[in-house]
Image (cartoon, rainbow, N blue to C red; front, side, top):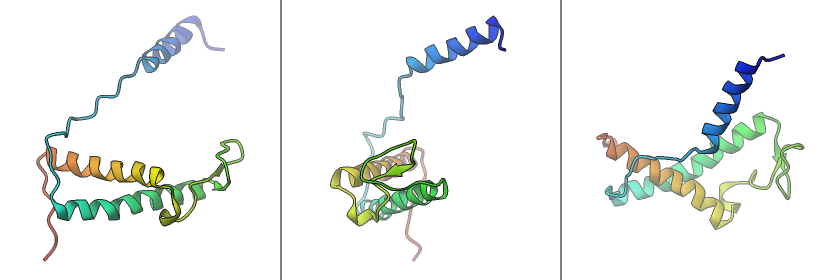
Length: 112
């Protein structure tokens, strides 16, 4: 049974998590060239595919509504069948990642 000091430590961690304020790197000054916008489309689909593959390996299957206890999820479908809202989530992840890469000074160029 944990002692008082462990309980206080656990409680402090919870309190800090409760006040968590995300602080992503500001990439608002980064403009992606057209080629990278096209790359973002491929990344968006792949982000979904990796997520779905991971969920399926964890025992999740498709379900009309999300149910964590039964491991059912309505987004376990091909990317093309997702709602535009769900696709936007993956697209924003891809755009944000590409902008971060550029912000950090890296460059992406096609292999010619």
